[in-house]
Length: 183
Image 1 (tube, one colour):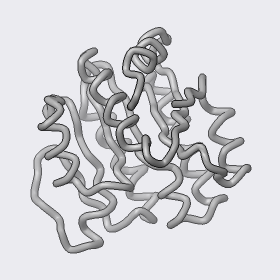
Image 2 (tube, rainbow, N blue to C red):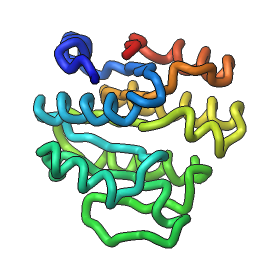
Image 3 (spheres, rainbow, N blue to C red):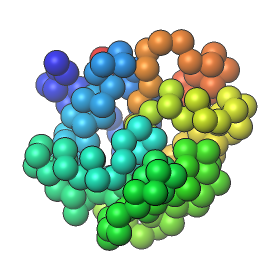
């Protein structure tokens, strides 16, 4: 079970444009991201979800069950297209696969410019993305994304398993984050 009050307190007492690394156990990873999304959308944030771990159709079903306003979210689905399961949707971008880092970066940039109001970017699984990408290339990608959103005053959440990830990638991420929250 996720301590929603603790997470809400941690997320809502930050200056605009914060970047947080959420470290969690594997069995709590999805629930942690879901809870963070609920908290932020209740606070009128518009979210860009980079999904490397679940397909769009699954996320929409769960978000609907949890009463998360889908009008406040755009999902960059990095899974469905590679499995021939793309579903046309207004609030989704379907990319070829989790290794399409350039396309992910371009999509995030385009969405940042299209969405108004308070925004956040949630990368749902650093650990999954590292399975499909070389650590050095992934570290450059993360640096690029986090620098871009920081310059535009956009908040960011990065989910990572608390198990050991590449130490250089973790060091790169941690130096760009304002805070690490362990769940």
